[in-house]
Image (cartoon, rainbow, N blue to C red; front, side):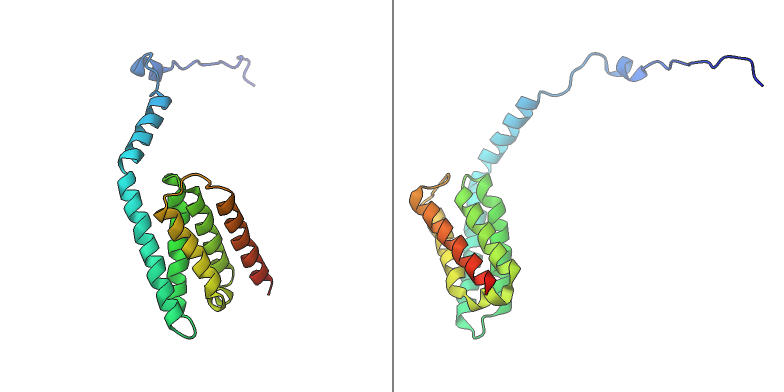
Length: 161
């Protein structure tokens, strides 16, 4: 057996010596810079939103023009509505995000049910177009809230059938 007591070796912290007493970046400043960059790009986001709405509107026209509705057109509506739900909040259009989420979910849950109910898809798309055309920022008002509720209720009712 070894009669020696265990030895504790303290390793010097050389990292502190290398960086000195520098502090990290100011997080508030980083956030302000990021927000300024987003504000500077807002005109691009507006264009992207309009492009996604154009895609949705064209796909809706194609879906309505064929019997049965073109599944590729329905899929494009689903994909573009998914993109809009992500873009809306960034630009201060939470209603666009909510409706995009609802429309994407309605189609994603049951594409065949969605294809049989193009009128409900059209109602969602019409609301999205209205939000962007009227530049309804924030949560809108009681009328928009009532319309959101009606769209949600209709989608839930159809999902049960």
